[in-house]
Amino acid sequence: MELIAVPGIPEIDPGDDLADLVADRIDLDPGAQSDERDRPGSPPVGDVLCIASTVVSKAEDRLADLEAFPAGPRAREIADRLEGITGEERDPRFAQAVLEESTDLVMEAPFLLTETRFGHVCVNAGIDRSNTGGADLLLLPKRPSESAARLSEALSVPVIVTDTCGRPFRHGQRGVAIGWAGLPASRDWRGERDRDGRELGVTVENVVDELAGAANLVAGEGGGGTPAVVVRGFEFGAMAGSDEQFRSVETDFVRQALRGWSHE
Ligand code: GDP
Ligand code: MN
Ligand code: MN
Image 1 (cartoon, rainbow, N blue to C red):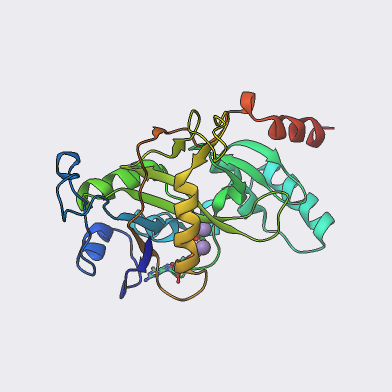
Image 2 (image 1 turned 90 degrees about the vertical axis):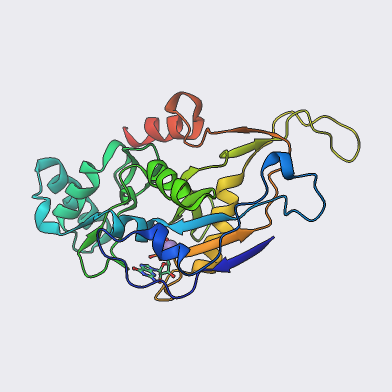
């Protein structure tokens, strides 16, 4: 498998056509149709395009200024509490923006961990304050899987929208898939056999997160200007796929434990 950063992508502005910008800079391989796969010489596996949510957000005009989020009492209370804990000044308008982008507050101190409107749990609702193209804030795409579907339709390859995210229990951030189209989110190893012939009972591998992680490694986090990365030669295989990505509260025991804890 190869990862190729699409060269020469410009600064993205609202209304830009990301599919055109990518297609003009790289020849994407849609792969062979399933009925051609056994033919000698035909590439069995097509490309997958991974694209940073940052540029999807810019193209979809998710840039915002803090002025657009006059702080209500809840946001002021959160900002005051965070200021007290961290000793750093907190803009209550930022807390307001996070609340408006979220449907559930998982933790409010010492940082805001929320569930976004499309089901992704992350710090500060994924609102970025770097690589924002000059705006105060860059909000995540409203429905990243729909953004991925539009790009996938236009480019005839599967598309994954990525973001850089922290995670509990481990230091450091890494790329995750917040939207995808054209491939399943996971592949199901259950029923496959290990080297000793034992049947696998639980492993469902989150393929879109793994590809997003690899692509994010190539995209970088700073001023590199490489938001689009092509994965070439990835084979999903014949396993069953599933599109489950974000756990529901009912099946997320860590989140339930956190809820009990943070509401004390
Ligand atoms: P995030 O992980 O989606 O939050 O995005 P980052 O801010 O980490 O940026 C990922 C990559 O996209 C980095 O290489 C950035 O330099 C690049 N990037 C961000 N915005 C733009 C843009 O408007 N144009 C180009 N060409 N690259 C961008
Ligand atoms: Mn981000
Ligand atoms: Mn990033």
